[in-house]
Length: 274
Length: 314
Image (cartoon, rainbow over all chains, first blue to last red; front, side):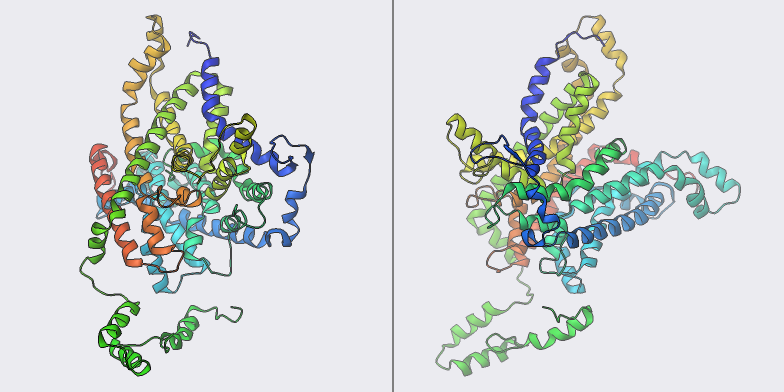
């Protein structure tokens, strides 16, 4: 296309619109390494003081325990989501399932309608089952709330695998399971990988469920940890410290995003956040 | 508790003695409790005793839709509904227009510039909501970014929860900046699907960029725009964590939306007076609204095309 327009007014408009975001993320990084004099934003000294929470548990409490729990939480959830979505997605995309239409529309409604609204009911069920305030309970709930999205995404990937591959397998005498396991699954590996990364990021970020369903449990995940630490009305009021903890918490996600950005794009298109 | 039993079974067994106590106490039936109260305070009139028994009952009880009646009667209900409508409409407008703007501008800009802006707008989507809220607090709190800027320019400053307009602006922007990237991604995909020959042809005919956008791009984005609008209406109706972590519905209850109120009623009451039933009733209304909207959308977006019949019949 020709350049029959000048780009700078557009850059200026985009710049103004994006300014809050740019400022927030810029200072998120800068503020963790520097101090600024009161009443100013320009830093005047370099310091690692704000990162002392990593080795000094007296600042904000132990950070490594919550990190391990968060990792456990996210990976377990990924395993459950991948196991169920890869099979359920196939069934809904390919098998002659009774009530297939009903399942699919149900999944779509659940997908479009964020399940956080169901939290009150989920809370009562967990309490009844004795899983309230336990890590297992939160993982199960998080994984099942993620499933409509996962199944939906995997169905999309299975839909794109040509029927001919499957028919060739069946023709050669393989069972439907073998066809799925040996022929179809390798075809949707990219989808499985993207879904896994997305689910990991989602699990790592999860805040509402641990906060609501395990408020007084003896474990903490990083999101609830950060929320407790970073209360502006607290005695440790210091946004530089809050941001350091926050950046530490978000670093794995940023790395994953940087590495797998292109793979994630097709998943974000069906994202779950408003 | 350090000696708390770890097995759920043990825990359930251990809770049994706690289910009955005396004036900090549980009774298995109403009559027993009334008897206990009368023995403790014999002078109390029977009416008071029954009121106490009524109010101290904490189990489930069939109330014939009384929660919905209460909702209808409460004056705050109208306020919360209006808040919700305003919140959804304003955030939705921000999401769709900014998403459209971002998609179209990044479509026309050279790759490096476009890439920078799309990554910048994707960041809020992957940033954990707690950190995102911390960043917004820093941006809008006392001694935060806006405060310092306003101070240096000599402008008046009100922090996030200091006034109703700032609180509204904060929650709309907090959710808008996350939501805009959803529109951006979908619209960008749809833009790339437009045959580029149409754009070339229009340029040969001397169309300006604005005419291209107005006459070629926007008409072809009709379905994606409709989809983003409907999808985000649903998500905004029931999303409240952004509001909860920033203004928490304040100042007062001026920015409280329906989903947040349901959540607070059932699970997050400061005084500990949790009304599960009431909260669930409010959530149920939201679920009903969501279901009706979803079914409408499923019709609109031709659901049938998604369910092709399987070609192998076993």
